[in-house]
Image (cartoon, rainbow, N blue to C red; front, top):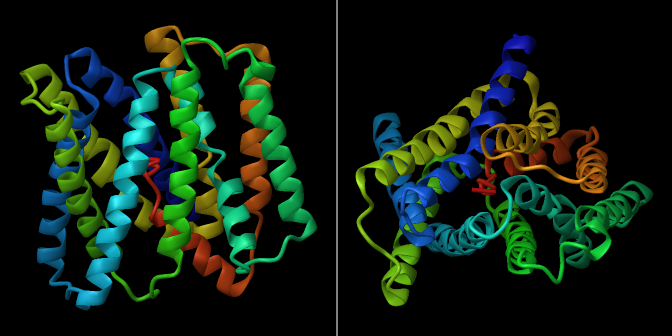
Length: 307
């Protein structure tokens, strides 16, 4: 059972990681960022509402629905920033920059007095900061054509940290499929409005539409469902650690398909950032384990998140 759970979590992380690749393929086929995201969340919303219907899940109260809508708006912003970054910089660098979100989430938790700044959290923050400096190659990336992409990726990390902080405060009994369905529906509407206002929303061609459908199913719905089963088998803390496999997938696949290469300094920086994630996701007893489960399931992309 444990081995099966590990495999399921790794499959989920792989699918989530491939979202960056599928997005780049959609861009190459002529789709804009808004078109890609509207298609992704629109298809995912239809599938998720179908799952909710089959499971006969009751809808939350009107107040909670409004909260879920607010979360959907935050997630739409996060997705727009992340997928915007993918259009500007290499996928491998983008995903590693976004993975600074656990440290940012911890900072928010301490600022809101939900957690105390103990040695483990302080160490994780310092390690993450050092990794970020290395990822930016001591400033070599900033000041080049990739500056916008870096800022978008870091903005996505901050936005996702805010999203997780808000989502964590919701009742534990809130059905995750219902939550995700509402979030995806809200994101679809918000991103469609953005695309319409900017004039960048258009019906995609056959090739782009295919990649968008793959993005919505393989990198959104499938990993979410698989992750739920994986958590049941191995627990939330193990699943959280295994989610660090995602950026490794992006770096490896991007290197094979696009010839993307991080410098030696950036590779070390990426490893340091992931080390900070492992420090933060060290085993937590009781109630904190439950919170970890919530954070893992409600991911991106990113989703998610990051997708």
